[in-house]
Image (cartoon, rainbow, N blue to C red):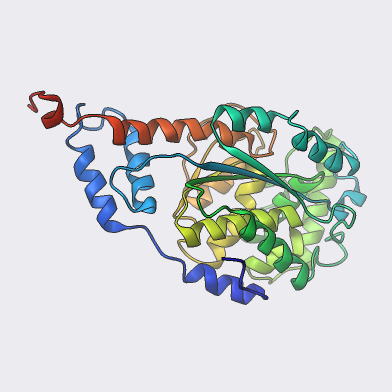
Length: 336
């Protein structure tokens, strides 16, 4: 189904009407888990993950056969404020690298058996500097949401989304600050490697942007402080919710984009788990607010869906054990 929303409110309504988990499948998966040839709880979180996955796929004995990784790229007008150690031109250069198969995410997607799709969103037209005006008009943010929505393949059974966009850690920090409050310094990090003066500058930019757009609801926070690639990730995560496709969240920027959905519609991220805790300082705080415990903590801070892609194999292991193991009855093993 192509995106059928033309306003933020229409998108919110579609998200609110998305189906939930299949409780019958959850119950059946729990019963199967209790009969497998292992002591109860011996596989720890793998057991919980497999049951969660089964509920969203609507079967007690699921498989992961068609994982999809999508990387969205966008440019940010706020880079004019000197918030990044790299120029905006790097965004387009990295998109070419993705397309030619030379980036980390190409290797990680291949290792996980996932398809990789890359979508560049109007790189020649950066968003507005959000310290002076909303980053996007409603038409622009809805178009980006629709790009993400339409990028999810109907046969996908696990989704990971990521981003490329110089300046987008500042955007993510501003979103987190607007949604959750606190001090701007609590949400900014070094991103691509800014020095102490650069870090202080990022905090100033975040404070100014959040103050300018004070009072915006969650989806308008995405519009006013986000970027096209963040909105596209949110759209893809929303489409996955609509299709009951489980999602592995990537790092700080992906999680900040996803947080706007969670604040807009309660339960909007019930189909998502956190792939990893990135080295970006505020990522853990966002995951705490979302109630998501990361699967991995590898000191990664690359973005481009890399941490989420690594976590695909963990979820595959969980599902393979759940669906492939024999029960005590099948194996002829005494269940004492």
